[in-house]
Image (tube, rainbow, N blue to C red; front, side):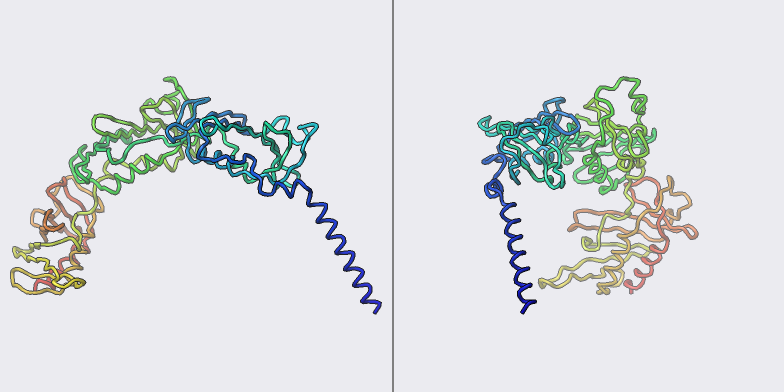
Length: 447
């Protein structure tokens, strides 16, 4: 019984202590501000002007023009829509965590006599304006002291808002260096390490024009354009470089120059020297500024002109071929695709000559897939000593519903194999085993 009385007494004490803590912690201001917005009724989409003072001391003024954010002070430059919108969203979504002091005698107590951040805004055609001062973290580092400029009280806001508000001028700047419409680019001038080159677009395909005429690797060219469009500045090295500075940056004689042509207009990207172990100086032709970009990004632009040459010897694919002629040792095997009569059934192939018949469909598909996979491992300037004067195999193929046709010669010289096309100069060295495999499969489907 005595033990039971002790247990009950202890329970009463604990309940009383819990009640005391609860009622002491639930102040009137807590009850009234749990869901209160710092700026009630403010909508991020209606904010059209911002003035942001960051912890670094930068003061940046931004305006939204035709739905697009732009920096107007201290420089005139496109803004990062993501970062500008981040500030606007924080202002609209910011909750009052708790009211700390309704009428502070000294703002210094909360670090608001010299705020770390100050953000002004105008919204809805100037009908709504506001300013918030943001101070340091609380002792527990879970929140930030803050105060609206038109109110006396000091409140707490979530510390997680700091990243969205603390934006320097550089943070708020659009860091894209080359802005262009990829669909309108129809030519590229290259100069890499003093070696010039020229690419031109016809329809959907790219071709090398200089220093020689050949097919270009569409994916490699598209990758170059994608990398140029994605290149972002790490810093602004100089806003108005002198000739001496350009020389210092290695931009008087750039290591790489890439000119994008769109009709009669050209926009060039220049890569200079190293800024440090992690960055390289760059600039674009329509802007005097010199920037730095990551060394890894700069390396994407140092590919030699020859690297944009197409390595695949065949444009056809097994699924697109409709008619193929294989000539070997004076005999030509002709194959035609036969469309399936029933939906869902695979197409078949017919051997038209020299002995009409129906070859094994899977072997024909394997043969076509194999030759379509033949790639150049390197290129030589001449067909001399390549075995192509007396080719081991000549392939003439029609594909894309017969709209396109190509002719490829394949030859052997000792243990090496080569291939050539009439629309590419010289010859391509290829893997000999792929030619051997094609010849072996051709023998099997010729019978």
